[in-house]
Length: 424
Image (tube, rainbow, N blue to C red):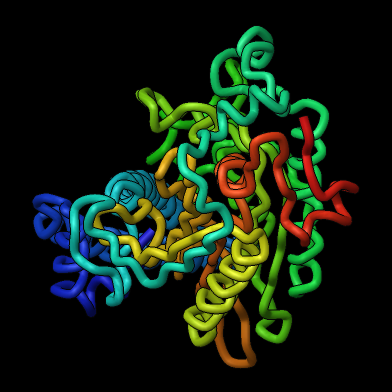
């Protein structure tokens, strides 16, 4: 959530930044938020005074009882009863005010970083770099769904029979390629200082709220009926929530975690040629990296994470590009996001395979995650990135490295697959 204390001192800046996201009437909403917070402060001051008076009277009653002089007790007890009733009333008003404030806060997205460009859709994203790998110059290259069928790598029909559309069954060399990529991504992350985590793939409501999936993306998540549990859309959710309600000593930074998990997304309303094959699935595998940093180092951490992801993609010998997302395409909780897309020559399309984001204090404020130094405590900065999401990486590899009767395997994967080609 945004921080009200920062909103007060940067009101005009916050208004302009949120209008940049295309949010209407945000000035009125922020004014309402500040007024509610003013009421909350007044009620808190009044409540503190009542509690102080109650404690004082309670001590006086105790002292009188010890002295044996009961003449004043009746009046003091009456006053004590009145104070308790007033305290209860103010406490309820304070609680209601806090609820009203939270209702507004949870529906306000993060403030875009100054580097985030204006724009309303993906068409307004800025291309930062492009790396063309001209490995396959043949004409009439096939899309991956035809390659998959030809080489019997993934069984979509049985996946549909078992669970439904968007739940593939990886078979034989398709399953081995999938496992090779996961192990390669995890090993590279470990070499780069990330501590591996194997988290639950189910999270509760508090965890979904902590990272901003709830209430914003509830319709995209699979919920377990009659349980306060959701299937994770990304490992970011359980990993980051490890540190919910935690105070981290500054000298322990940076915290760097990596995890492989299956991920689950409803992807409601998705249809058409752009979602064929591996382009969009309900269940898919992903390796996620997460960092927790302080404010002074979070920009540097974002740069390092982007460089790491770029290096991974480059090592797979496929074309890629890096985009800076505009305000209108920015995720609800993110302050700044760089997307990496790989080129699928069989489709002649760019496919997103990684998003690397800095959430700054937005998630940590929801989770009460703080960093402590010698003098004070401050909200942590949280960052995460896909490193990498497998389906579109597999699609790009198959389409880029396809031949008439074979598929070449990127060299970095040979020791993981045990083979350097997939043959008919």
